[in-house]
Image (tube, rainbow, N blue to C red; front, side, top):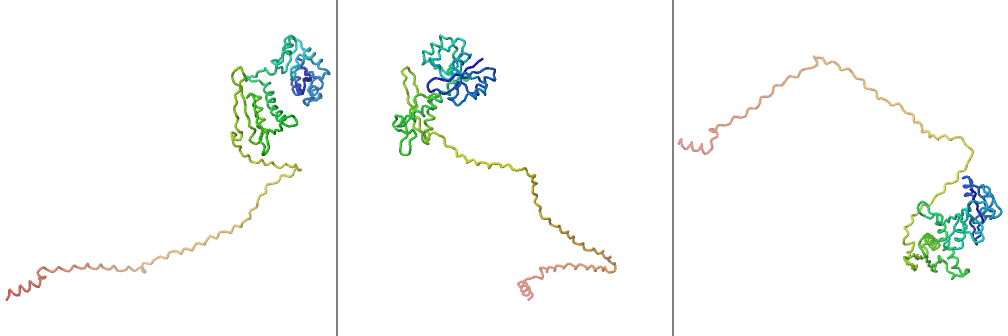
Amino acid sequence: MTIGVVKEIKNNEFRVGLTPDAVSAFVQAGHSVLVEKGAGLGSGFPDEEYVQAGATLEDTAEAVWNQSGMIVKVKEPIECEYRFFRKDLILYTYLHLAADAPLTKALMESGVKAIAYETIVGRNGGLPCLTPMSEIAGRMSVQEGAKYLEKTFGGRGVLLAGVPGVARANVVILGGGNVGTNACKIAVGMGANDGAILQIWQEAAGDDQLWTISEVKDRAKRAPAKKVEEPIVEAAPVVESAPAEEAKPEVKEEPVVEEKPVEVPAKAEEKPAEPVKAEEVKAEPVKAAAPAAKAPAKKTAAKKTSRAARKKAAAAKK
């Protein structure tokens, strides 16, 4: 298939349908790519990069439209481009047909196969082509709003983040989808350390587009405490030098201690035991055991007469 990339001509549109890398991918897949000269200049891609990627440059947008089986754009075609529509053409771009009845009619009458980026559904049910644009829109909204608060652009001279002694600006966000969420992130990021005061309005049920308001509390109060990270010490750059001989590991020589011979004490000469002569050994006479002392005989009871008894006996003799 021949794929064409034309220069965007809508007011203040500087993007391009395909980058050089995308062109290279199509060429490697066997397709041919035509690019209008200057199509990528607004995005910083010169024509030379497209040529290096394998694209063929064309002088006019008409040549690209007429020779291509599929046109890849960024924004929806404007009225002067309707004449290039034909039945066998595939148009791949953002269309936003709900807000553009003339374009919708021109597409239907021509029979062109128009594929809108914003309606492509991913495998997980999301909108992979619309989500990035919603993120950009949300982030740019706060950036642009902060700019128009300045006096030079007709604002009141309010600094979104404020300064010491001057209150910060209040920010109101309508809607809490991808656009509103990203607007909230930038509004907080552009504020002081604890962020700007935010109020997010979300759509309520009903046909009259009622809104309910919910205040987002100060970020400093709801944010978890940040862990103190240790400073990263950068390693000193390695300076390459001439290869040197491999340094041998230094072996520390321990002082050699001369071992003194251990003196073994000489054993005392054992004198042979002198034989004992029988004559010299005199047997000591065995002393007879002393006879056991006899216990003194007990005096008879008659000898142990009392003095009174002797007197009595003497009186009887008389």
